[in-house]
Each structure stands twice: as structure tokens, then as C-alpha cells.
Image (cartoon, rainbow, N blue to C red; front, top):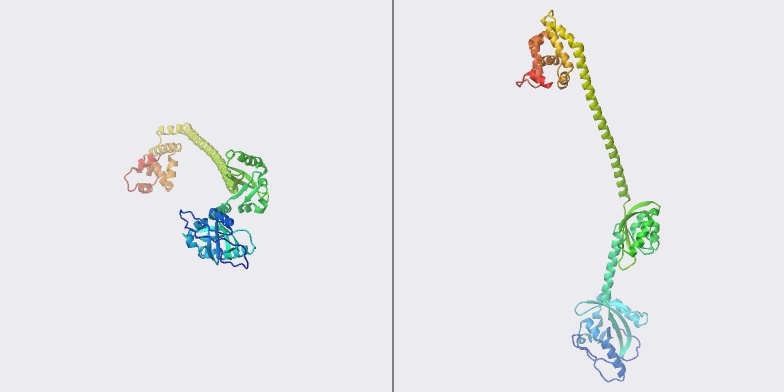
Length: 435
């Protein structure tokens, strides 16, 4: 409410109004009295009682009159309001602006209503939209005020402001390039993420989005754009296309688009998946290479198996040929020597050993023995071979022309190298099992 204002000169006269009743269920009426201005007073009383705005009179900074709507609005009774300092209702933060705007309106410098806050008797803050004018009340200068409660409108405005702030924050910080499109392909708004594609907001807003889509994808994207406005559920909501940057580079994009309810506009979010696509292609290429190498290895393994099998066959054939050749070309002569009675026992023993060794040629004993007993000396290997054939120490001594003690020492070393020196195993049996 305005503070006390004293214009230099005010004309006219305002009828005096009797005391109002409080704002409870009882109706508040202006008492009727005789006046030279009867019709005008009756009109004012009717307007004041029926008005849906707050009408009041302030004189010397205090309320002299307030209509029923105003009384109900501020929460005080009429008796409390009359003679009350008008400044007491104004929110402390708005007192200076109310005084300034009131002076300006009374002097004709402004004509538009101004806003301010009041605090009701119950402590509620209400927003008013007010105009004031100078009048004469009981022959003295006064102010006639007319105020409308706009608290609900201000609450809606605050919600819209908060909603706009929330939307703006979300729009700018969503993390992906986002734009709002008109049905005619005009870009209404874009966020700052488009800077990563070389475009500024000023370059894109109020232009067509067609420049952003690659030539090969344009027909498909444009068809979906139009179809979405006929049936929002008909086109795919998410799909990929290639975006053209300001420098002409093609970027792989995963787009999400949907209509804004109640409008013909759509909101579109663009997620750059170029690096992901490159990684997928690299993985796919690597997989193909590995598959190719695996196939090559399988072929090599197959070839190796064939070669190994062929080697085994060749070895078997070679052994068979050696065996047959010995049997055909050597064995007959050995048999003749064995039948020759003129040979002494020493020659007969040599013949027996020769026969045994020839048998070893066609067997794998010597190979296996030398492979497993690489630490045997050549003499120890020869003695081991004779022991395996069942020769006694004396027979081996006679054959090799060394003493029996030397044979015994070699026997001990062979057992030790085979790990049999502390175990009761027959050396001949052990060597035979190796074959």
C-alpha cells in the first residue's frame, strides 16, 4: 500500500464511509447517509461492495477506508485497518519501490500498474497489482488505491520460471547434441554440444537441419521426419545416420527423436558413435584375421599329422626292409656258422652275440635305451645290452675281454644311474621292460 503522499493540489470530494464489519461470514456493507452527492455515493458504495479488487483510501499515511474484498485479502478486521499505518502491510523489501512507483504514478510519470508484496495478518505473503490516484477525502488530500491479488499468477510464473531453468539446464547439460525441430525442418533451438561439430548456435538456429544429414541418408531421415508428424509411433524412435560437420567430415550418429506433446515440434538427440564404430570395425577385422590364421593353423596341423603319419609308415617300412634283408642276406650265413663244428666255444659265443645284436638292429631297444640312459657310457651301454640278453658276468667278461671285477663295477654303476642301487630289482628284468 502507498505511503502518505501530499500533492500540491487535489480536487473533488470523496464521500465519508462508515466503519466496516470484520471479514467473517457477515457481509460488509457501507452505511448509507444523506449527501448532496447521493447518486454518486450510491454508485461508489455499490462498486466498492461488489468489486473483486481491493479498493482503499489512504490519508496521512493511514487507511481511512477499505472495501470488503480488501479486508478479506489482508486478514485484518475493518476496525483494525482504519487508522492503521498503510506501510505496515507492505513487505519490507518492497517499501522503497512502492514509494517510488506511487510518487511516479501520482505525478503522471507512469500509468501502468506496478507489482509489490504485502504480508497479511496471518503472515502470508501476497502479490498485488496496483494503481493509485489523487483524491480529496473530507476536504483534505488523499490517495485512492485499486489493487488486484495476483499471487496465484505469480506462483504460476515462478513455477514456469523454475521449469524453464530446469529445462534449460537439462537441455545444455544432457551430454549429447540436442535440437528442437519445426515440422518444416527449421531448427528452433540447439544446445552448445553442436560446437563439437564446428557449428555455432547462431549458424544453426532458424535454418534447416537438412545440411546436417549426409546425402546417402537424407531421404530416409526426411521421410521419418514427416511420418512422425502424421503418426508419432510409425517411424523408428532410434536409428543411425551420418552427420556432416561444418568441415565436411562424416560422423556416425545414433539419433533419438520424439514429438513434443501438444505441438508439431520434435526434439532430437544425437549421440556420436564414430569411435565406437571404428572400434567395432577394428574388432571385426581382427576377428576375421584370427579366424583366417586359425584356419591356416588347422590346415598346418592337418598337414603335420599327415607328415607324421607318413613318417611312421616310412619308418615301419624301413624297419621291415632291414629286417627282411638281414633275414635273407645275413641270417642264413649265421646259421651255417652255428652248424660248423669246427668253431670253438669262443667263436660260438661270438656268433650268438652277433645274432642277438642283429636282432636289436631291427628292434627299438638300443634307441630307447640310449634315449632314456643318455648318461651311460658307451661301455656301460654295451654291458647293459648284454645283460638284457641274459649273459652272465663271466660270459660278458670273456666276450669283452675284460675282467669280471670290471663287469661288476659297471653293473653297479648302471644300477645306480637307473636308481636301482637301493632297490631289489633284477637288472636284466628292468632292462627288458625298457624294450
